[in-house]
Image (cartoon, rainbow, N blue to C red):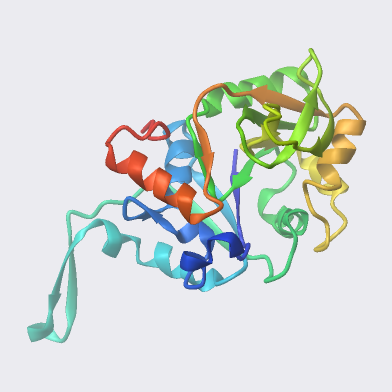
Length: 257
């Protein structure tokens, strides 16, 4: 099962960093948050990734092209014509496809653009700016158990995000705006999607959260996997500093590998 990562937005609310690189490439503990997300999926045996890039997409491509340089010791031997010797080569079991899905394409449009890389099979999808300790295997098992088109991970946090109205059967019935101190469940990403999801996306202007997910909820085709553990997005510098502090504590909750 492939993993689709949305990594094409501007990240304007964390412009201190995103003016130089895409938000998913902002580093936590010296490695892009995108790497942290991929490490979690890889821990559960999901090693094939399709990255929906856009803004400064070349930064993502160059980082993966030079992965050995970032993770290994390197000797630059100028006495032999600028030879490069990589020591203790360390690599991941990853197959990574980086797709330029456009500069201003909306989230749904980015997913639609990578359809040819997915084929007619279910896939995992999440945003490139949030980490958690969700058990991906249990999430996939839950998705397979109900037979619906889509499953999203729902978490309870005190943030201004779109709220999910969830029934006792774990079906998502509707979306609404969050009120202060609401304490309701929100969409944390970490989704499992059937290939039928592409039929709900018209094109580049489709916002995935505004039409496809709403339509699926109306049709009873959207289920929620409730996660009570750790989840944290990185929308601003305060949240970036929080994640950095957790990582430096050597007890980062999302580090399950």
